[in-house]
Picture 1 (cartoon, rainbow over the protein chains, first blue to last red):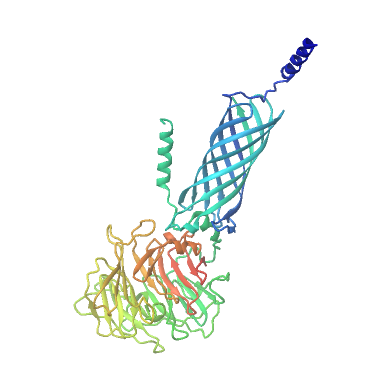
Picture 2 (picture 1 turned 90 degrees about the vertical axis):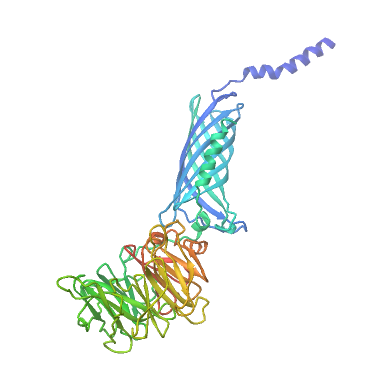
Length: 196
Length: 381
């Protein structure tokens, strides 16, 4: 009896391991050291600005466009760290161009259901903003979520939506502190990811 | 550490090169409005007149007119060039209806015309050319700005001397067209001992005397240009503009603005004792973009909180109390459109306040006519 219990316990404990041996490792499986190069491009919709007092106002910008290049390093199958550079342009009421160039550090989690991946991430850094011959550097946070179709071990394609939250901060006297704004921009980008 | 150092250096250089302007980037965008492109958007506008509720603008050898509904509304200007040929200037004496004068000609031979229309039309009628008593060729108008700092109390006609042995004699007489007579009184400026080789560029009156800016000289004359005398002061640069302000404003006094000279920007001097003593309001003045400012004209708008100072190629600045503030300032940017217009790099040919005091007009060289209403937003005509 005692021997039968030991056999049953051994079988029970070894079952998950046996089951794991049955799992099919799909080609979207990543291991530490894998890298991903992401190219993104799409429209940017300026949403609104917000003062320190919470007052909301129109950005007064036209819809614009963005282009981005990111490099990420996988720490395991589901988590990667990386950085990148973006460029975004939109126009003011008199045709002057607003350029925003964020230099970002980002973390991304990938939820997976082969052949689909659902990256959810957050980026932060500083953005160089330029408008009408003036320039300033703004810290920012960009939460993002997307969906990728893993076409092959090397290529994934999909769509990423992100909310750019820029902190356009001033400390007076010119520009005045009251000119500080939080700027909300919505970015919807087509993404192509190359794994290497 | 070795890898992050270049990044830190790069960010430091980027931050150091950042120039935020006078106002927050996105705060400024919130108040920016679209500047409409009007009839005069690319015109050179040298002068402006208002009479019986109608406006006249001259420049680039064209004369534009429009009825006055509101200067900052969307009504268009009518090109009335056909009524007189080669109109280069138009001015009106503020206190008398119908005293609108135009200078027209081919540059070599010019004439002064007076408006004869009793009521405004898009093609105003001008009388026959007025003959100056000395037979000189009129080459320019100079408004004599009244003691309120904005209204045009009378009009100077700057002339060119007749040819002497085939050679031009240079700028000589000035004629004063006052509001007191139909054909207007004439007077001449013939200061003894000093030949006027340069034209009078600006004039103002405090109600008793008339002050004339002429090269490096500031002249003080009687009400009809009588007994002219030079006010002795070392300005450092040639004078370009003069303005007299009296009344209840804290800005009372006699102002002169100068040109830039070499590496020194222009200056504004103030006298509160009719020119006996002077203090410097600003010297070696630079724009917000560090350009040397050469002052061209001064004007006190009706709200009397500041004097506008037009410049040669750097828009305008403001004299507030006894300080000069270059634009764009925090205030001008936040009040809309100055910073995003072409004004910061424009040559300001004149500043004009409408009779109702609601609008300041700014003429430019090839960048049109601009207006600033009570909301302080700059718009282009």
